[in-house]
Image (cartoon, rainbow, N blue to C red; front, side, top):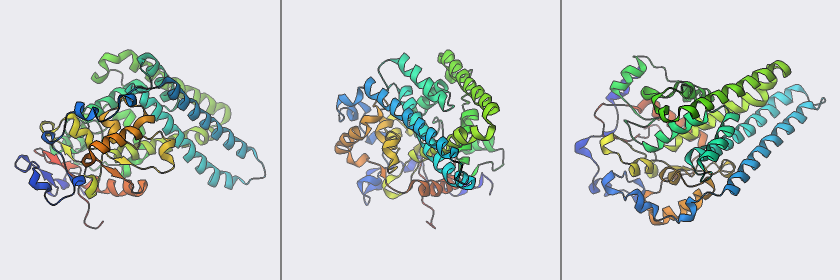
Length: 388
């Protein structure tokens, strides 16, 4: 199917169909698609959450850093020792130990990423220099250019749910699709998981792509030095990894570092995508044209998802709606802050406990057939496929 075919069959809301109270007459509170004239200001919502949750603790933040690095070290040493046991067959080491290690260590890389992500939002501490120093070190360890990603991510937060300005996984208008696809269907199935994360860092996403290894992109104009330091740090880390591959062998570096990195990248693609997409009746996540958008409706258009035993391991980043409204809240206060928010505004709640991987596969299939939209679309909502 050509990537331009879906324009003939999509569910959109145009100017004359802007949602009114009548639209919700037979719907539950949680199915509402709020418009900007029907939501409180961000300051009003802010009053529902105690101020103490906006104050980061340096001690707590460093405790999480120490804990994560300790777990990463334990996983590395455990896997190393298991590989050193001669009587264990190689097939067991590669077919059982390697996948388990890659998944566990890749998940911990994701946890470390979340701590650096807190640094980028200023929720690690109140000191910008400390935040940027720790964030650069943590993100460099997992080959993420801290400053450039921090700035593109802030741009995403400032424009979440805005069809015309958001930075990643936004619906694509026809005039943009003509330029983006050039008549060819070049969508990688399921975004290539970890490969998609690598492509995103290098090339960016969509018609408004931002390369995170180009320090001269206009988005980084006021942070050129930080961008250069971050990118240079990545190349230093890569140089060490290449050097170690000559000493210990390429496959060793692949097993101990890059396989977990692919798992980490896959987590980033899956979770970032699912944070802002949903089709079930109780978590419709609309996308707004620029004239229908404001900060509150855009950032309400995100969903809390449950990652089971990994939820706390990865620092509650699945508790996402309040994080988007108030990125200054440290990760260790997100659950408590969400409780207060939902008590005051239960009708804004968007939450899913559906299985993560199944939901991602289903949502990607819906996204791939519906994400191309008309030039005049005002509010766009993904719809569940009939065969689901």
